[in-house]
Image 1 (tube, rainbow, N blue to C red):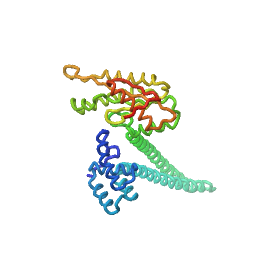
Image 2 (spheres, rainbow, N blue to C red; image 1 turned 30 degrees about the horizontal axis):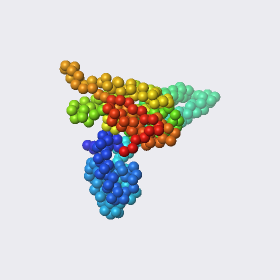
Image 3 (tube, rainbow, N blue to C red; image 1 turned 90 degrees about the horizontal axis):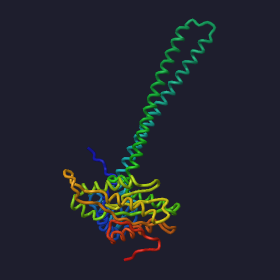
Image 4 (cartoon, helix red, strand yellow; image 1 turned 45 degrees about the horizontal axis):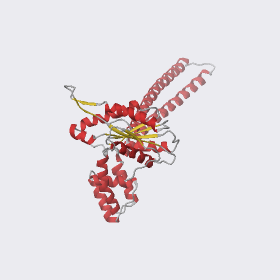
Length: 353
């Protein structure tokens, strides 16, 4: 049985520390071989550094040996074959389903048109016979008209049935496509946006009206120690609860995302002061703090969950990187001021090492 190729979302870990370690191995390789720093090459050499694709590594080594680098056409070919192959296969499969469906409908339409032409010919012959002054075989003419009409009716019924079935198939394909598009933007564990989708949405937001746009970055406190002590399954449940809280509390036009590991981001509209954004962050903070880790049998409370928050309002000069940096600076203040708190960062404040 042929195994399904992993999707591009499954190729890379959610854990930012693990991703950073892999990139630390990948970037020196790119520098050593003078590889242009673009997303396609990052993906190729990132995958190379994970060691998951032995054949990709062999082919890259051979290309570097032969060309003392990686030609653009070779990189594009390897990218298609090893990085986005799952997406290409799914796209081809979906396209083939639509093609088969359209060809089937086209065949039915052609058959129906041929049947209509035959019926029209039968009607013309019947009319011609009926215009004769004396018809010796009137019963035979009427029988032919009756049979051709019955055949046309049956053909029309079959055609309508196939059209209804085709409509259902098209709707099913459309639903599959919509689900795939949603899955590509959501974090599978928490069901909020993933980092890639969030970055794209925030960048789009920054191209429009920035007044009242606030970015909140939050980090679950001591989450690594929590995972080490209670295990990753319970840690995953905490992340799921936080994702659910954000989805429940998020106002209209708000955006929530898992930015990486235990870190989440929220974009709010209509926050013209830091205090407005702070009120929302405080609400989320208190809801998270109310979570309890209990022994199921005795209901004994073993631990509580807390989170730290950093807030930044978008300015007219902000781009994606600068706004994220200022929100992260505010989060840094919250974590180094005792954690379990919300820290807004005024526009005129910056942090430096």
